[in-house]
Each structure stands twice: as C-alpha cells, then as structure tokens.
Length: 76
Image 1 (cartoon, rainbow, N blue to C red):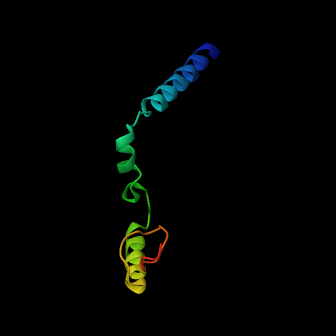
Image 2: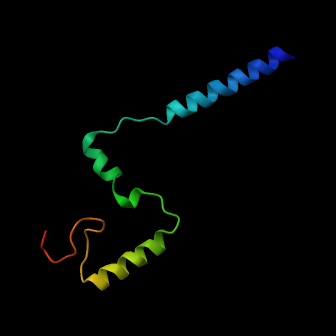
C-alpha cells in the first residue's frame, strides 16, 4: 500500500514540477516594454482606477505621464 501511495505522490510532484517549468518563457528585450505597460497589470478595481485617474487629470489640468515626475507645468 505504501509503494502505491509513494508512487502517486511522486507522480503528483513530477506533474506539478512540469507544470511550473512549462510556464517559464524567455522574453526579448523589445517585448518587455509591452509587458511592463500598466494595462497588463492585474487590478480588481480597474474601472475605479481609470475614473480616479481621469478625475486627477481633470483636477491637475494635465493628461498622461501618470506616476511620473512633474505636474504638467513643463518645469522638469
């Protein structure tokens, strides 16, 4: 009975390891910019974050450059 259980556990570990390795990929340098785009980040409240960003841009009188230095006054 133990040999069957140990085989089953070994098989489960092997399948788990193969599944983990199968998810690995090499990304070319010029593709990293696309993957680093904030739109690719998982956010559960993406709609709310978009509305907040719109509100902040309207309040500050600026558009774009969210998260960067400067406030839209071109004084960088």
